[in-house]
Amino acid sequence: MLRQIVLLLVASVMLIACSEQTTKFNTVHEGQQELRNINNLLSNQNEHSKVTSWPFSESYLQARHLAYKGLQETELTDSQRAQLNYLIIAERYPERYFVWPIQRDVISNARLQGDFSEQGLAAWLELVETRLIAAEQSNLKLNKIELTLLHNMVTAHLNNNDNHVQTALNKLNQYLTQYKPRTKLGLVGLANGKDWYQSKLNYFSGVTKPPLDWLSEIQQALKQPHSADFLLPLTDSHTKPLVMSYFTQEHQHDGFDWQLEFIDPLKNKRELSEGEQYFWQVMMETDVGIHYHSWSEQQARVNLMKRLNVDQLQADWLIEDIVLYPAMSFIFVN
Image (cartoon, rainbow, N blue to C red; front, side):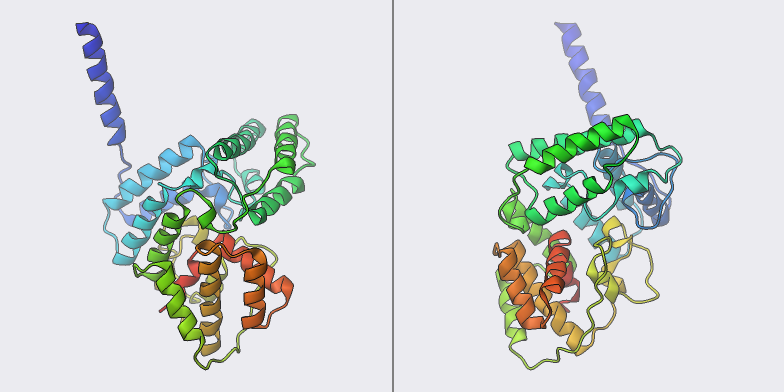
């Protein structure tokens, strides 16, 4: 009996020690570089690191968490601390179930790494499927836009020659072919999705305000006389959120979020023209509509086409940007 108690005490001490682990950084730059290394397969910059960190694997999640904790102990600006707190809050939500961020071609990025292995890629592809199955059991599903983009990414790599990877890709492709997406496009369609969306609104707007209040305020602003003179810088993909086209030219890579290429959006957004401000107000309205009010794709499309005088293809591209980058439009609320 005494032996069992001692073993339990030892195990408890070990668990406490593990939970208190952190990664020590002498500077913010060191912490940011660690996050770049961890997210090397999610980078648009062809980042190379000594060890490939497979996105949302257990080792990735642990390393990222420790890096966040380490950064908390460094000297951060108010803006950096706000972004770090936002990213730490995001750890609570179901992002980990969706292992392959569909904005990034993880397979192509992985092949550029010095330690790339077919077995490692095959294991990660199996993890993508395993986590999606687990998510389904928890009533967490991709929406139809996410499913289409992910399926397209998988089929684009189906001609892989390695047997392990080919087998994993074929299996994932078959799974996605029969996958039934959730009906709601926005975060509102996920468990705790409204809370997740609220946390994003809080960070990107810099203000804590309910979505309904934001919508009322934005729609009131849209009633005012406005200029609709703006350029629409659309691209062939969504590897970068549209907001990044409206950052200053001399932006500094002093942030912590791979989705924004480690740029602090609140410090690096540029001044908007009257027409651009109107454009982003419409995007904010549609953002709340999709992610909070359960707007369908058709509702969002009609709103964008009517208010912005864009065609259907342009409207659909904007909807995809809103779906993939929730609440980012609120960077331009002030």
